[in-house]
Image (cartoon, rainbow, N blue to C red; front, side, top):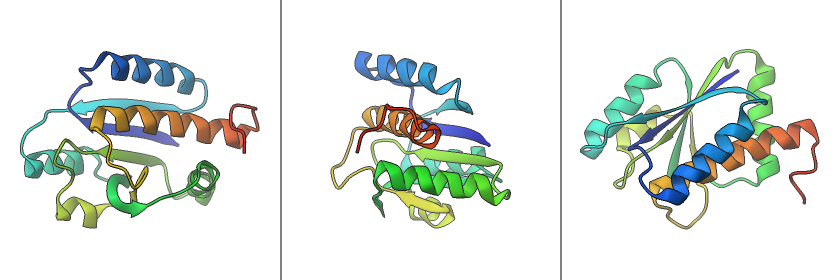
Length: 147
């Protein structure tokens, strides 16, 4: 399975750059993945770019209206997609400051809310990378995740 993370705008905050580098390095041994930064603009242009880049992939859109899961439940969901044999590529879509359009939300296969809180999009990227890393450590049974 290939994991592609599409985010609007490249991280500018030092802590976000550092967090992305940290978790990208931790993830490399576990899965094939990439992070691609798309140009920021209007919400409509951002959503159109995210939809274009994720065409043909299972789309997970980060959205405050989405479903909240525990880390174990997220690991289970990703495992079930992997085991289905029908999902080859997963795209995680992180919008800009104004979020996603209704069109993108309808085109997504799943809306995922990290929390009831709203996160700045650079922070959301770091949280997503950490949770994806945590997912793979849960699946492997390593001691990183503790219940």
